[in-house]
Image 1 (cartoon, rainbow, N blue to C red):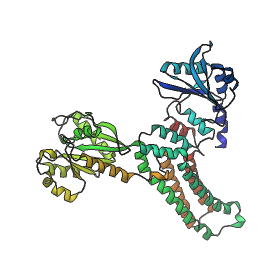
Image 2: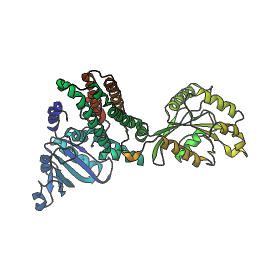
Image 3: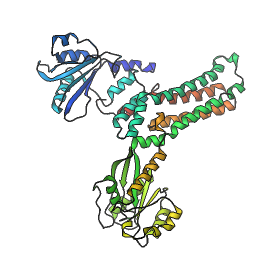
Image 4: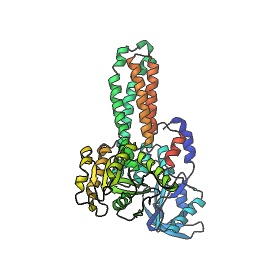
Length: 472
């Protein structure tokens, strides 16, 4: 924790906050959390134990007690279970209370309203986790992992978020920092004790250690490509000329009639986007407008949008109608005009041809990424899905290591650290002033410290915790 921030942290802890911590809607149980110096006082004001024995155990931490939640007039609002957690031993690191009531919308809202009327303040998004960070209970990586594990909607995203939550990623970052600090200490020895000036040759000996750290950080940076996919999903654009079957494939992959399918060219004027899960991966499937030279103003706008999606996609499924007499000529022109490196070519409507393979002979000689399919019968779709999963797997890092970078902020700081370390490396090899080398090393350490939260600003915290939901 930064010493200069301790005063501000104490001010933040002077307040007591409360929020509903379970999702909105009806359910068996709902929960309300209170955190801050008046948590226990609010519990004693509003909670009446069901028996004298339960009342006598009011000061026992982590003991779940049964009773009633009372309003200011002393009337029971609901039957609840209540637990008190002392400072230093709760989720937030502060004095904390949790109340569990029946899961109706109105009853849990009534309980929260009574707590707010008694002096608690409504918690802001992510404020409980922010307090956990400010109190020193968790680092910033751990705090961000809380949001990741809540948002995880596939096995891959959950696996990565869990590893971040249990600390494997933080341990890797801290290990790199310790190694850097050790090198920095050796360089700064000649600054602090000039009479014991270090031989320039000794400085050069530090270069291999620095190179090893750079390689380790580069490995983390490279993992972000897969980490981004884990966090944001794998984006696949279904593209091609009008009436090639794009919307039919979109519906087939979703297993529902999501897109309108007609024989009229240019039906899809704007893109449609849906999420599907393939082999544990979240896939953002986008059905784009058909690309052709003619078309009205609205259709042209849809085509412009389609080109943008194609440029941003992780994978493109380029569809063409193999029954079209000019499909080969059109396909060659399409591939030349598109800047993106197309991945999979889909020859649709093979159900209308007796010997479709002869039509594709020349094309398969040039590329093994041609997939004959029929969106009407579903033929070839299973093979296509396997190929898509194979493409995703090739983009993914090793998930077993627990050190996958999923945050763009982390990647940016790691890239900055590498740049500073390369400057320090050049100065070591050139036997330049140790003060200059030490400065670059300190900058690299600062970059890493911003990842874990040893160094932070209010702007960084606001950006991170604004993405959390209320109650977390």
